[in-house]
Amino acid sequence: MTDNKPFITIAIDGAAASGKSSTSRMIADKLNFMHVDTGAHYRAVTICLLQAGLQPDQTEAIKGFLDTVPLSTEVSGHRALIRINRYLPHETELRSVEVNETVSGFAQLPEVRAFLLDYQRNTIQEAKNYHFNGLIMEGRDIGSVVLPDADHRFFLFADPSTRSKRRQQEGQKDMIEKRDKIDSTRKHAPLKCPEGAIKIDTSERDLEAVVTFITETIGYA
Ligand code: CDP
Image (cartoon, rainbow, N blue to C red; front, side, top):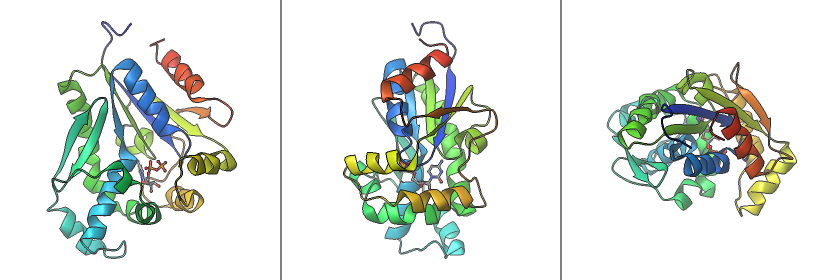
């Protein structure tokens, strides 16, 4: 099914709990793509900055500090995991209440976004080096800023009550409304549906249906 197809890139954007991560993961597993979760990048930077005792209003110090911080990727199955300052943060650390509370404050800073941009774009080359069939990258600004020339761009959304329910079912304390507000109103790379992206309402469609729709749309079904 995947023989002789060119390497392709897919951008998936959407708000918290819109279904980006489960969709991207399933597609990556099905099609042998590399999955890059850029939310994890912002969460990893947040952990690193909090450990250094920095707060979002200390932009000069943040920039100076980040200039010294190396980033690299560890590939685990189909997932590209970020290593920051030689440290690989665990999923539970990335999704802690403290990180949920503070990540959007750091993610709105141009200093933080600029720090991650080249690293994120370079994951395409890493995916090729590992002989994946393609790359699927999810976040808030992938189709608009990070990979505006992605072969396929999708924007996932769901009504707020569905999204809060999903987070509760995952057992997570997460202030998604607050994060959505900061993410969609910030000056740099706000969360929005990129022009020309295909919108998918995940409120009523289950994961399988969303994955089938995307794989058909990109010509992999
Ligand atoms: O999984 P969930 O949708 O809850 O969030 P996430 O994708 O892990 O992203 C966590 C936070 O990182 C978001 O609320 C944004 O503040 C920030 N983020 C961003 O600014 N740009 C991205 N491309 C991805 C995440």
